[in-house]
Image 1 (tube, helix red, strand yellow):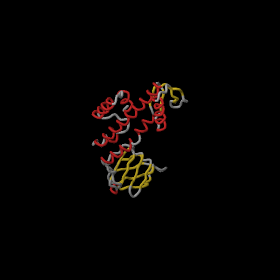
Image 2 (image 1 turned 120 degrees about the horizontal axis):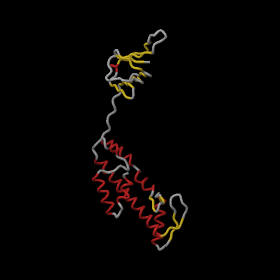
Image 3 (image 1 turned 90 degrees about the vertical axis):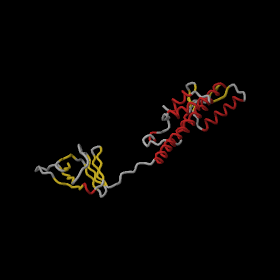
Length: 226
């Protein structure tokens, strides 16, 4: 098939008309706007004559688009751009639950991963309680491993790493929400997600707050905002 617009012919692979939309596919080299009538022909028959299949008056449609070799004539209104409030709500939706998920993914201590689900955190708190009560060793388990004897120093190191990781994520999450609340650039808001590097001033605040808490800033900001 092919279409003819004025005196120019273009190959066409498919045509789908409705009262609201007419779609022509496989059109190459077209330039908008298209005016007048689009003539759709079947390729020449045995006698060398092209067969007229349909004709489409472009004036019957209010909007035209041409993308990926597809010509679309439509009366459907162009979708309204989302409001700033809608973009903020979408950004908040994207980061919802990701702080908790990051924390529960756990920390690595001495090349072993310790996940931090709610049950894991309770178990770690119980282990630390035994250490604080004077236990020299405590039975504990890294992710995917069997229970083993951990020294008091190891339990304290795991607990400190878990606490620092949780605090770092919560501070980062709060600053990310503050960024979403104040951002006015409609091109920037759709790019904000958990793990995105903060703006320079918010990154400075993250560094200041983690440093004040005695946390190794470099170890966590690189992981949070890679």
